[in-house]
Length: 230
Length: 230
Image (tube, rainbow over all chains, first blue to last red; front, top):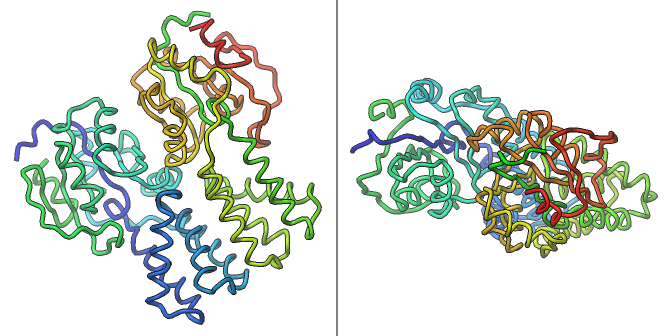
């Protein structure tokens, strides 16, 4: 693979730089536990997911949409019988999630430190700007990144715009992330490079089932392997 | 004023391009009406504002933070006695706000059309990216803007970063907006130009009481007056 032309490396944030999805899984588990008198766990999980998907277009991604969907799901699941104290609990838990400390993934810091000497690094995420900025500052990784690019979704069109804004060509752009659906397939689609570092927990909405073979694509086990290629 | 060097003109969005604040004022009024059995309107408004301010740091700006604060305020104001149906009403109203049609302010479209022939126009807002993108598309103004810049807050540091990202100097940057606190004072502070177009409704959090005199500052009555200067 010819990587000499790469100018900008974009990193997805959640579950690429730091732990994220497991906190949502834990919050969902606690939620269905809170509502276990109204509905068995599996049905609870399914209804919550359906409500999240229905709200995705209007709310977007992140903890605040998640909190609003949890409240709506609690009302639906309990057939409007939930005591108001449950709503208070859900709001408090959402605030706790927003304040959660950052757990960096293995090898991230050393890898970014090396790569930032040779490339312009940006963070490209579809989370909420305020949350992601706060996480970046708390992570201690801020100095390695030129800036944060927030996109409302990660489709080929969004990547085309991003690459245009960075004032480079697609073959000078490399995206690194844990989601095939968001970080890899749309990037390959626009003619850029994409390296996949899978994470053990993936949100159902982000899962794609297909084998990827592509001459601008590599799958890695962890971030430090990037230094073998770049 | 020497404006020949201007390369990028950034427009604030809410209450600069289109109507926004009056919808929040209306939502607050309807909220305190919904809770009038628990508390008189003035106290209700004050408690809601206090909760919004307390949550601003953790939630940021926009309709989703507003919705979560309304739910929290309803619980506080009713001393945990509010029926769950009120929470459902608040969630439904928030979704309605997110889907509200766009009302452009006077003279905006013609002015942007003219300015976009000579300058790079960007939209610079601290709202939520998904919401602001959706509003921009619904507004029909999308083609006049090079891109959207979302900032988590509008402090001098945020403008310094923005100007650096745009790859220009401060004296090549002009900001246009309705908020002295967010769009004007921090911009003058970093050595750029700022034109103020006041709007009749301003959120209490955005109000500053001081006379501004500055050689890189002009106050206008409406957007079309921009064409007299640019």
